[in-house]
Image (cartoon, rainbow, N blue to C red; front, side, top):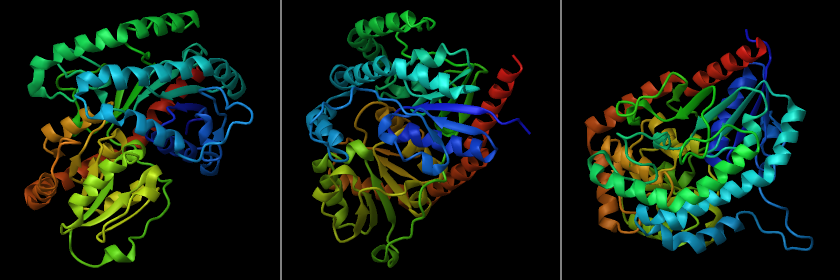
Amino acid sequence: MTAPLTFLFMPESAYGPTNNCIGIGAELRARGHRVVFAAESSWAGKLAPLGFEEDLVDLAPPPEAGAAEQSAGQFWKDYIDAIKPEFRKPTIEQLETVVAPIWQELIDGARYCEPQLREIIARVQPDVIIEDNVLCFPALVTAGKPFVRIVSCNPLEVGGDDIAPVFSGLGEADRDAWGAFRAEYDRTHRAMWHDFAAWVESQGAPPLDDLQFIHSGVANLYVYPRELDYTDARPLDDSWTRLDSSIRDTDEEFTLPDELRTGDEPLIYFSLGSLGSADVSLMRSVLDALADGPYRVIVSKGPRHDEIELPANCWGAEFLPQTRILPLVDLVITHGGNNTTTEAMHWGKPMVLLPLFWDQYDNAQRVHERGYGRRLSTYGFSADELRAAIDEQLADAAHLERLRATGEAIRARDGRRRAADVLERVGAGSRTL
């Protein structure tokens, strides 16, 4: 048995990366290790009850004295109201108006928290530092401790000439469009990357590769099912380990509500994530399309739950224990976030995908072109088209059997265990140096 080690996780503030780290961290705790989270400060009080230590960071200055306290979720409500017209644009146009501003926000957070992060590392004295994020925090790679990178978004992020550019949503058959997208990414991101890369080096970190915002680690983990992966076109070196899924056990138990227990209509889970669900008009469009159909629907209503009226065949709540619900349903309607996509594959569930931004387009396209679901135009679908996509996915017995077998294989590969094995090996190696 490996001697007890200390693992410091720094996940992106979003639910997906943090939940992924929670799942892996729980496996390490079960093996007797100490697990500390340097998560963003809004997670205060949410990680300690799960058995982890919290040593949190601020990614922005605190509100000014006397400023009114925002209600929970208000930031994202305001953000979606401001940005949602951009989600209707083609992905190549979103590079300037959605993707680049997100990178800049992340960069600002990294710059702000650098002193705090150095103090946390000095206090915690970790054996291994693990980052599940998309950009470099110099303190993590200059601490003299083994650094492990986790990619819990679409692995097109680890680019290559023979795969589509990340954030494009372009498929294998769209190769003629890859070059124009890459050129526009360069135009919209080069100056920002150059400034960030210079700052990273000024903090003592190694140079970043061209147009890359993060370093590789001594080991690198990525969460994506083999059945959707790109390694046939873009092999990865031996430092990379695929975690086909990484399902946390920390969600509360879920019992199907009485109003959805009766009847034999297909049971659907509908979630657009915490951001997508804040677009109330889009949520209503999907619900209107489902209202008269022969379906029973569980709805993750999100931060504007009080503005979303559910049809009679639907039931929902602001927050739902997704990993407990997915095994129960027949199909998933999703925005294509990496967690939901990999969790649906983990349980062998067909998907209908309505992507909005970032890597959601890439996940939707990959699921579609590999035959595990159907991608629709998020703002252009008709009610008939959505119902036809659902019925198509559920009517093909061979398709459902393929999904069932795929889910069984993914679960058998046990991504959380594989992640913990890698992290233990890295930690044990650090003790011998």
